Length: 444
Ligand code: NDP
Ligand code: 2IT
Image (cartoon, rainbow, N blue to C red):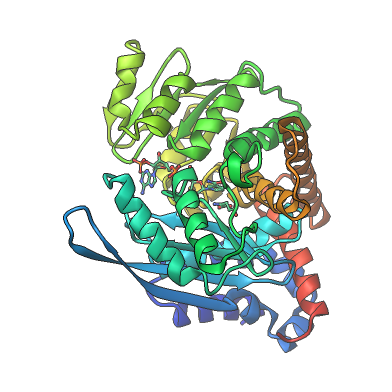
């Protein structure tokens, strides 16, 4: 059995009941085969793959808090510090009822390669809790965030581990967590990113993931001789990533026809109204059913459905495994040109394969959504320097990073004879820097 197959089998055996983690490891290791096989003896001797797939540290803790009725509630908190070969652990905090250790591990594992692709000195980590911020009062969210940070504070720091937002964690939650960190440690420092602008946040961090997704999509299309201007797009999700992906798509001359949330989806033939979406989701924290009040011409449907709408570009921006083989078939039948992942692992393995086999340009999340964490690293730089860069400066750097990521993954794919396969390219390009740093630092 090859070293890659052995490593995959061991991950499945040793991490039972964690299908998302198995999926992420399989996808990465399968596509690293040519690189691993070229160095098999050395990597095996150094247990390189075993070290890569085993987090350096996993922390699991109780998060007690009191609700508005005076009742105690208990949630579980996690932080997985996966790999610090190239920098301090860096990655978001997901607050969603579906969170478990397997999901945090899959996200932390992906984060290693994504962070490497940014070209910036950040290692891979992820955290979260099964707490559901939906329907909670601001006071309840604060109580949870303070309790979560009271434990997390022991493990993080600006040179050790720097968390940020993800599903369910936005500016409000980061603010409460930062306040509690500062109170306990007595240190005003860049321990979290995605902070508010009045206390050390970076301009453009809010927009960065969605904008970055469009910058890399535009560059990928351009290098294949296609202009994004005038194209139609379908987007899923209506959170941080989706909103700013839609905004930038419109700025680049593409028209976005859909968005969705966990209960339903919207089709707007005139193009999604971003101002309305921001008001519904960022200000009112309401459901998408409200969208029709702003745009009478639009349609609201319960359930799933955005991938059935005909468009040139598909941008999944909600959650993992939201785009199935059946959805991929509908996209291909409707003549989709490109799929770029705003979310982490939104496309199932079979769907990815089907899209690639049918000539669809496919940019995986670890490259396509890296603009968020890249801008987080720029926020860390500004905090260290005690300065704030202008919006133009941060946005220009973000654009440069996304363009570089595209060319690096494109080149890596070509080097190994997989021209146009950006999944293979991203995994190889991300892996090369991490493995180099791991080898240099010895068996640790
Ligand atoms: P938000 O919480 O802001 O938005 C998430 C959106 O996805 C909401 O519209 C939500 O609907 C929907 N959604 C979440 N879970 C599900 C589900 N199980 N089924 C259907 N819809 C769901 O999160 P973000 O926009 O920040 O994150 C979206 C994706 O992008 C995630 O995969 C995240 O890991 C990834 N990502 C985020 C980055 C960031 O900087 N924020 C950076 C890189 C990747 P509802 O409101 O109804 O729950
Ligand atoms: O998945 C991700 O890259 C994020 N949620 C952003 C992480 C970060 O540290 O900005």
